[in-house]
Length: 255
Image 1 (cartoon, one colour):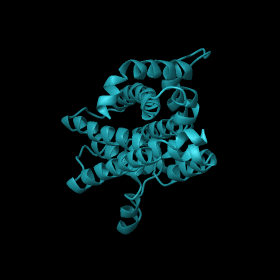
Image 2 (cartoon, helix red, strand yellow):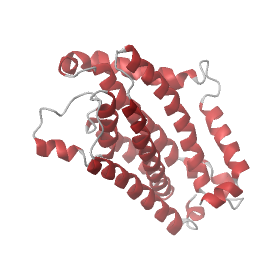
Image 3 (cartoon, rainbow, N blue to C red):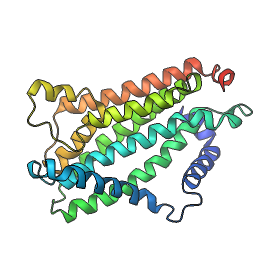
Image 4 (tube, one colour):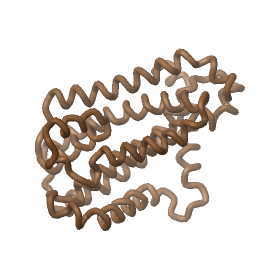
């Protein structure tokens, strides 16, 4: 895979440029929407849920922003990734190139947006009086896991979308369900321990919890927590790689 990426480096770079510029084509604010959009979502959620949960959670704005940050990156990467094959059928149906290049380029675009929003997030952290400690370096771990997880899930979704166009509607419903099950705007501290452990079955909650634990609690998650985060990422990427390898030659018949 890495060898083919190197061989098609020029094409990959051009795809990244195209995807990023296309996203903000004919917009007044351009890249500003990468920062403004999550901030507006944060403001709306804070106005709606702040008076319900804000008094029971320390640094509620950061608590909410951490959840919104991870979830927005996840939805952006997977939604763009799901359409990567169908939207680029005119290219790979005529030229023999690795099909995962299109998904990877879409994820680079989403990752750039995530990086810009992450800088704003750290500015909010500083403004809220939370000290920057050495534990912050551990945030690289959930970020890497989330990147791999998004790539893997994007591979799965893009393959399924070629065969089942209903997938875009089903995925829209599933992402809404995931949002409610990821404790973005509420806390699960009042739940029974067994219920709290059930939330760990949701990879998104796991990555969001990692961010909050490092930044708000100033603590490092346990070793099993790290292993579970890596397991979700590896499992998703393994499933996606398997589907692309198995159905690689069948994609052309359904495009």
